[in-house]
Length: 440
Image (cartoon, rainbow, N blue to C red; front, top):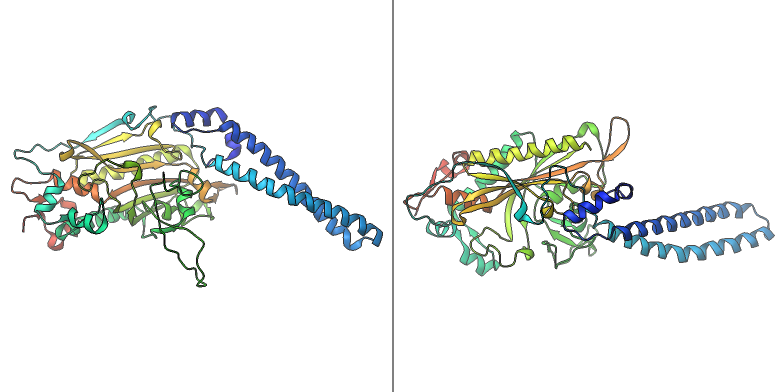
């Protein structure tokens, strides 16, 4: 969410961002509703002031004066009874329009209409050449008895899977390696809740509108009712997060931090749940695209300095590149174009690892800079050295998700005898420090 004052003063810039992000925005309507909202608010405040004044005069008034004052108070009350509901309607309309306003776009973001226009800016690592017929991760997982998609589908439905034996150990090794890597980089570890209230998902932009919409938001809502501390049924709707980002950032919601606390750097581990409703028919084979997985996510809350946020954003990407290098995975980096940027993003990168069975790269991470767009929704501020309150800037990056790097490791490090070598950096997290997964 942007500041309405900024929107008023930068109408052309906002309209340009909406057009380049392929977002339909009724900007003129928003500004008209804003004027109406302000006029109605001013009128209500004047009525409230008059009401307070009358309340002060009444105790001191004579009997005759009280008759007049009470009549005036009745008139004010009737006007408030009419104007306050009208203001609420206008405010709701204003809020509905405001949440659709996209963030501005960085100057170095490529112009494009869709993900096909994302720009490759870097490629590293040698793509392996095999002198034997290669297998995909599905066949490797089955042959090595480390992945069971059939039983996963039986128990969990489409896109369900079981990770078994050394496969389970390898997946946990990926998570432990990523967590420790970020801790070494100065990030504080956290395991956040994965069942959250709606405000955390709205605040971070995972709801497209003001409320959850099951038709477009790739989020699972929990149907069963919860109870609050008093034992009463909770009125809060609960949702499963698709990444640790919402719960990590919502940790600071409605808080005012001190500039000395910034930047706050957190690495979070969580289970993740995504309905993938927008990807129907895509990547149906294997577990490249699944409903449930694990992920290590990094987030940063920092002072409101655009140039410094760009530097921080690039530093976060460097960590992902280092992770891929240490795992021995060939990768490329894409700078996300305007047409593929979500509403809240100012700037973004994707990192992709080579996956032999796809004969192409597959996304293994994404780094995003939101400036203060998320912080305004979550109401996270800080006091700068001059005593001025500002909204923090928020950034996030996928360090490692569990499924796709797993796919890349199996397929890139498969051997002629059907075994799979384990990257050196993961072996210390494997039982017995094993360096290879072999057929039983």
